[in-house]
Length: 143
View (tube, rainbow, N blue to C red):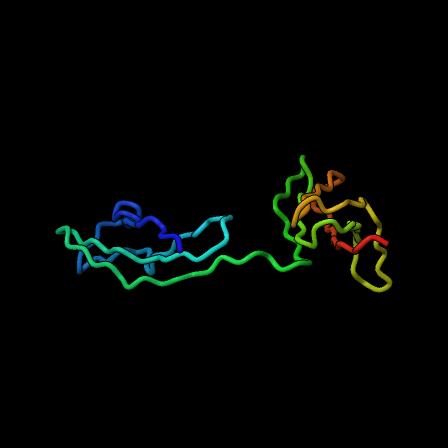
């Protein structure tokens, strides 16, 4: 189990002066836990008041799990670079990426690439993008 580093009081300070009469405006405090490393993590909060007194919460344990097979995520989109998708699936399979402009029946799916999966996930970029055009993507196992 990995212990995540504790944040200092300066990392969680408010934008406004803090006192019993003027509590921080950005309560409750939140942060983003950003990691690609799978496993268990133990997190705790450290509160420090304006006199330097500290209180440490009981730890909580979180588990970072792999994406389930068949999950597709849009990693990035820009009008100049395109739409980058990340697809998690079984290693060694072949997948077809298809696109549709409308999901009303009958849906017209058009294949735009066929790829062998080189690792547990595949990154594909659709560079044929136009501003304000909706596109729908799906992956299918190639035959």
